[in-house]
Length: 638
Image (cartoon, rainbow, N blue to C red):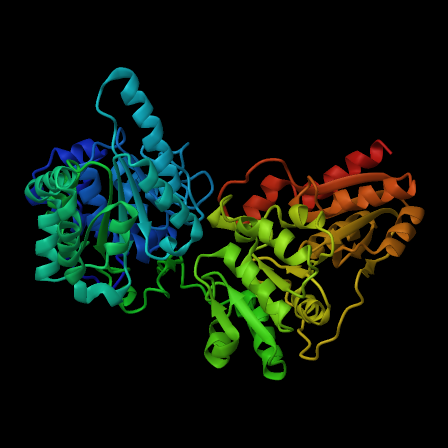
């Protein structure tokens, strides 16, 4: 029986059995009777380690038993185990030789928060975005089958673990369709932590799950196929009888119709049942879907009661007499940009019934919880379906309503065709509130918003804005709302510089920036949240600083003036230099025949690994000291 904790351990728990496991091979050497103890120790260590380091939390607690059973039943890393998204892979990392390193997770030079091919041979596919596991695992199964055909040896098993949330994405269904068509040996584990299916997890469902995965049942199934070929006239009756049996106790008939052998749902916290089922399924040919029911946050009572709130956990401070507990800082009291967006959304909806807010499964992260409660008829959470979200907004705009799509920059990448073809090409009236623009700290490269300026700037009809502070964010959202046509406001994760937010909303003139500081020789053109840094450098070097506000259209009058009055133009942005706002400035100068020295500062042509946001800024060369040094060096060449 699972041990349940109510508090996070502040000291390392005793884990004598877990400490002997540095690889899945050592796990497989244990008798099955000891796996329950492994699960209890693993869960205790997971609670302790995440409390020490911070990180994703509830999802990992929910798959402790499943992770153990998968590594126990399959010969990893030779058998491929592909996890979807990766929030739930902390137990997997613990069992695959990274137990002590888990204390470094999401820290600079530490473990990644998601599976990473360069980190371990047990991570066969790097992830961070959802719904990729099925396609990746199928690709591995195809490659393995080719090797098997060449040497005649049994192919490796390929297993994909996907959550019920990730299964909502179109990409997952595309892969399911192809998996059924290819008909290779492949196991899909559907990790379902939706409590609505708990009634299906009982004695009868468990009995049939054992039956359907047994050699006897599958012998019957294969014999039935032979019988159907011999007596075609009986095929309808036999097939309908089998489907009726399964439909009585399981929701998987749709997967059966697609060509899968469906097993479940079974209790995802019952290790003997999981191991027994997985061992049997290794003998089943063709694509198989195992449906397991788990509880997010299992074994930690606060997370069981609030799985959303405990999706991730901050590092827990351990105060002593020498180091008293930290007091809340002024910065912690500042509203995050996500709250600014949520407040603006509620304020607008109160007076604008035509406003429709859309999010692809990010209502909490994007600050939309209050809006969803107050304006449910104007709110659509479309689940993990970014492409659908954007085209849905296009359709809503066709009916004279005003859709606002709240989406992380990294996830907008998944809907690029829809942004171009369905919105911009038709010049439809859609506002994009682009969250997590720029670097995102501990979530690393998979979630960084490094490219949105570059991929949007080339699209006709787009208006693109980047606020330098909290008040500009509010006013730009209003500006984008009343603008007729596609518009985007990109803003960073977390808090801003702390300026006063004006409740009154005033539309900014499209394509107009402002001069924030008058200097000489050097003009720093800032696009977005790095304005405080630009002003500090401007004070040091007596440089002019412009808050450009608009990336598209650019303030060409301001550009003409600054180019005429300065010998060096410096562009500054938290976006890839390639194709970014600075590139737009140089393109304008080239088009007009303006000859002036230009220095582009932004994200370099690398993926920046997880670390604190401040550390990432230093890596990118966007800290005050590095910016100042690069400007001085460039002036020497002017």
